Length: 115
Image (cartoon, rainbow, N blue to C red; front, side, top):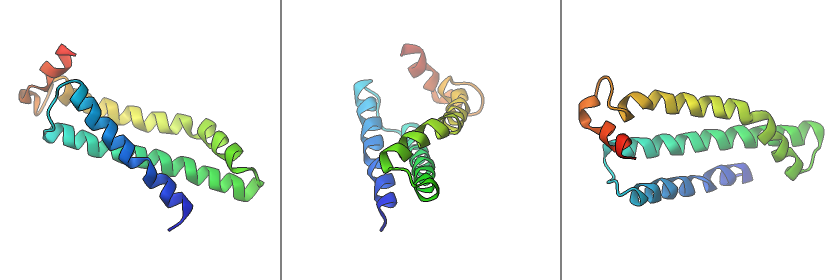
């Protein structure tokens, strides 16, 4: 197992725990919708970590930069693609969160309105 694999995997538990802590903070229960959201969150965190670490390793290999400098450059260069895919996922979940369209009768719109 490489250092990159461990680095990517090390961020996943904190994403899951943060999601569960947020559910507890807002007194929401863990249901099918929140479980799907947690799975999506972990997937997005994993994808973002892979994008950053892959870019940093390539920068180290090609340009011979130091690890700290390479990850800073990766954060600057990969910020836009990371934000674009994160926003696409967020906007894709808005209809069900607002109680619109198919599945709107689940009553999730009430949770958003009370927030």
